[in-house]
Length: 507
Image (tube, rainbow, N blue to C red):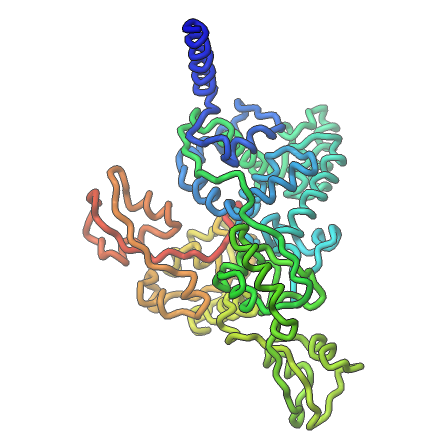
């Protein structure tokens, strides 16, 4: 018996040693989402490829970037992975939104791509995603994930089972990849992904994804500590059956309005869409309470209604604009045959239960925030010239790269096009943004800029801290009056104004 125990212990120790040697063991336990992801990895990893080596080295140099991506993915990753597995796709696909949108549901690129999966309008329409005044399915986590899986399966078939080519086509289009393959065939060259000459963004896009997957597969090998994300549903899709005010729904779920919008970013307005979809993604630990309260909510309490007497020269369009709804919605609520209304006519109009400014993440409020940046004053139009970059232009006008990107609906790493026109709101006298100027912007912008304090650690520098929080070194110096100081001291506390607006890190 004693020898059997020793033998069993020996086997256990050998197995642990093998895991450590292979780099696959980590602090994560069996309920960790990363273990489940690893078990479904299928895409070959040619580690010796220089482009892949470069992407892995970037992750190792800046581990906080992967940490941030992981934290941003945590509400959605379990759902996305479950959908990927249900369709028998490699689990690397569940990491694709890290490359596409940094797992930010409101991410929007200069190419009009939106949502976690960065669908452009035409592709979204082709794969059945609704886009209307009330709702944009490209940002709906549930609907867009199903559409992305369908699209990727189609690309996989088109490229005869080659996932690297399918992923390249997801980024740049099937035509671009097929043309690159045709060019290589004519030259007698290989037609695998690594042999093709593709646009720079696409050439780095696939290695980025494979690099993230490789590091997640072997975190110890690359000296990376992964964020602990439990392998359990973070969200539950709850049927609401009919239109509901988002503020009322948030109250039922015991959440803030902003929190509810971040999980349901497909809804453009203060209420869910009258024609559907009639569901909400609710945190799993709040879903039961939400469903119970919703079941006891009378139908007439889902929306707030006012009675209105039409005045001279008013139209349905005027009333819709005033009350944040659509003419179609008013027409249907009052069973009108057309848009014609008369003075004195009595209408019932659905209105938001809160002030419209409280719904900060609706499309209208986000657009208003962009319009009001800089209080609408001092707006400059800048035409991009050869050699320009966001960093160079931002420095020229005394703003941060992230401010400049946000004003123009871009990601900080987006490539500029010559003669493209950018909107710029330079700070007064061209100075770097100050604490005062950051606190005097529009309502949604105030929400997105948060003051934080950071305690300096051994080995920190202004550059590393600025990179970690996505601000500029010059801003750090301005906020903390460090103009004449070269070195930081461990334990020193720095004040930062961190922009948490959801802008894609996609390059």
